[in-house]
Length: 284
Image 1 (tube, rainbow, N blue to C red):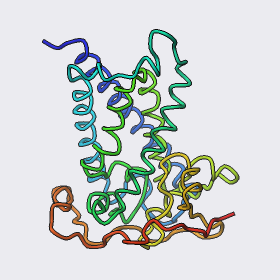
Image 2: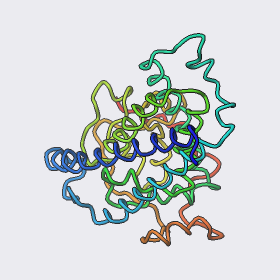
Image 3: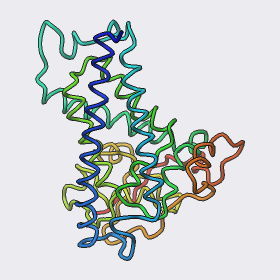
């Protein structure tokens, strides 16, 4: 029989999946319409990219990963590791909105550094799958190798539960990260003007997907560009846009992509040595 923790994890995963399905439907309409009105790269597919089947296949795979993460988080004894007395214990309660803000900031900071790690030569073959899209649009956010997903997303979700963040805080934060991933990959010519240093914009992240290896060693933050500003990896020239996207040497099909990192050598490795050097060409 399922214990209380198992039911809790199952309910959390089911709620996340339902939220994602609703958001996917909304994104098809919203980003398709906006892509016609203000494209960053005109002439690209709007509603349905050439690789939408592949991207949605990864979306389904991510759903399986979310269920697995929930199951791991519900392992008996995991609750004994909880630091809930610090975050939301019996002695005091941290307001929900404070938990949500704290979770967004902490997760984004962790993902910034994990993202940089996946650009290292040792891990690039896993992350190159995400960069393989030659037509970057909002569905590209789904194209993530399971190893990349488990480390950068599922593990952090599990750690948030272990730390003691309320389920509702996780449920609120998850769609925010989902939607931010969708809009930053959308083919939109949005820079957010003076707020470009506060919230990641489509143009900000499209530079990260540039086919030019030097340009993709920038703009790692999923949501808050302040991390890139602080650590010298911000790149966003004012009057220029990236034109070419993709990563060489990555197979086109899902099966080939899933086993791609297992090959002895992966072409188009990330820059070594100075891959994480400071980028000083900051747009104004």
